[in-house]
Length: 244
Image (cartoon, rainbow, N blue to C red; front, side, top):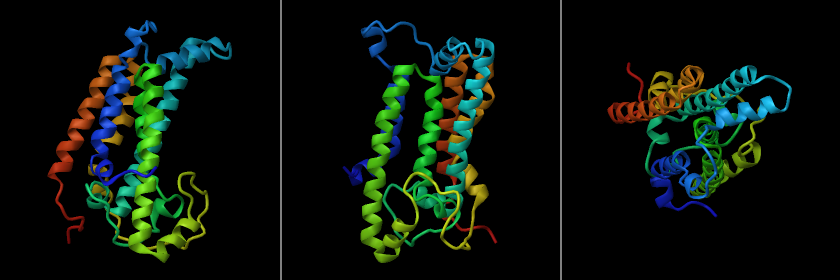
């Protein structure tokens, strides 16, 4: 069930392919499933049909919900990267230097994977509903495989300290209070923000551009965000050390 080293190494490529298929959703035409309305619009229509609110009220509510999902994803990604370091987060190979029990890692073992799930879930709002369903089901399975693979690797490399951490901190559902004592560490907030420009860009897309009700504009914003994040990530220094 756990992911292979190949899957971990090319995890970004695999997730991009899943997102691409979610947008493409070729089965819509082949199965004659109707027009390519976005999930955002479909949810607003569904909410208005309940009779609780009108469509003009339902649409802003769905946009606000999507923006909240994107904000959670961006927050978790930046917070986790600030404590773990972008060099480790974006590494093509699994790393096991030490057990990190600071920042979000005191409350949940996999804040970065959880942040990725929320971020890509926010992207799903501008996909066709069936494409969004396809994406989130396969993404959830893939991320869970990555988690199992990484946990097995860290258990082997770090031994008892990591085993104790596994029993103290939940895998995916964060605790509101941690039983672990606060830990000191060297947080790298600016570098984390630069390394996580893509989830931040996804939040901006949902929180700002979705109010234009222009589907293509939102898709373009997602593409620009992703491209800019790749450029900035390539330009970041290899070391996570803070300047003196």
